[in-house]
Image 1 (cartoon, helix red, strand yellow):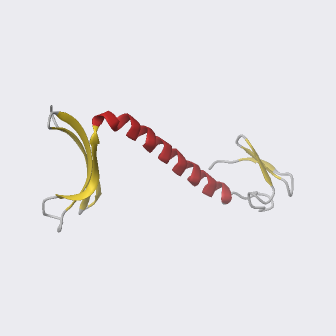
Image 2: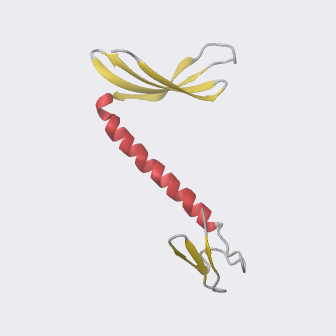
Length: 116
C-alpha cells in the first residue's frame, strides 16, 4: 500500500503529520507531533500522537464532529453574551428575546436582525 501523508505546519519548529500506512499487513492511521531544534534542521517524530487501525477512522471522525460542534456552540454562546440592544444598550440575557435571526429587547421593545 502506498503511504498517504498530510502535514500541518504549526510554526517553523513544529508540525502535525497525519499518515495512513501499512504495519504488519494492516492499515494504520498515525497522527503525530514532529519538531526540529532549529529552523534549518530535519523534523523528528515525538512520542506525542496516536496510532489506530483505519477501521476506527469512522468513529474517530464522528467523535471529532461532536467535539467541533460543541466548540462552535460555545463560541456562539460567547458571542450571544456580548450581544446588546443597539438602541438602549441592554445586554443579552438581561431582557432580550431571540426569534430566529431577530432579537427583541424587552426593556425598550426595539427589534433588530443580528448576526453572530
